[in-house]
Image (tube, rainbow, N blue to C red):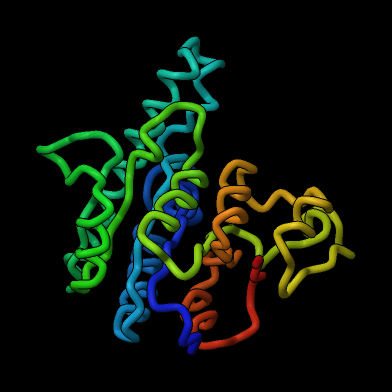
Length: 236
């Protein structure tokens, strides 16, 4: 096991919760992620999660509807809170304590984000699910994940994707694409590799927050990574 990783921040996209569906939350997908996190917790790894909302509403869809970008992003942030509440309940029904912290005050629904409270929850064995993005329009949930990872002193940010790492070109379009086991932040920028939102990526780089890119659609990959298997791509 990677002994140096005691506290992690997992970035789950809303699309990751869809599984093979076209909308909403897949029971198989959400239980897969919850079970993997519980397995890590049994290994004394503290887990925070930032969840997206693209399975319900993406802010970028607003233009075609006639909704302003700012309102569309607010709707997307609310979608992340719906996903966070679903995750919380599945964790609790699986025997794992979990709390939701939102970027804006919603006292009837969840706690408002507080760094000291979040760290206390993590240290006391609870999964903390961060919802609502950064609370501001024009910032993606990738940026929220980078921010929360840095704020709670995570050892690594895990970016869940539907590909098994970082490649020099799109492996779905180029069968000769080369996969990197490890790569530096500078190399990613120089080669214009689209790992995540650039604002989020630079935030991690400037704060020396390593990123692991893993395909979590394949069951067991998160546990395998922390067991030391060479899967995904590590950026540091």
